[in-house]
Length: 139
Image (cartoon, rainbow, N blue to C red):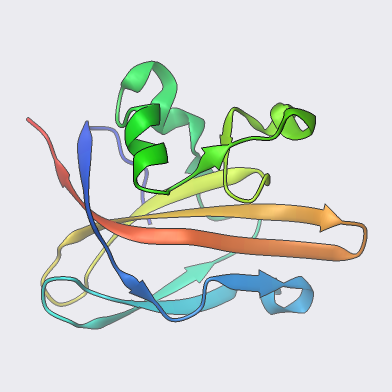
């Protein structure tokens, strides 16, 4: 799990086993798998609330790593509703949104996982993975 610092281009979206976790399903962590687009290896992903991930803002701030348009075009995030703007202008499910880089354990293809985590309503905490995309670094 790492942050991404070089400009990237999103590729195929990987198949994710489970993408929505509620309440106790996130304690102590949310665990799922994704299938590598290149070699079909099943890779494990574990997201620990308040421990895993980096703010999505780091990706699109000044179009340093990805543009807002590319994030929106690939359904990575959506525009945040007016009432939740304090979480930033782009979010997953109107929740605080984070990302991290990972790689296939077999062929080492690079992937980015984007997820939102927070209290959706009183008594309902949700972790939603919008997806895991293969990416390549741009020169």
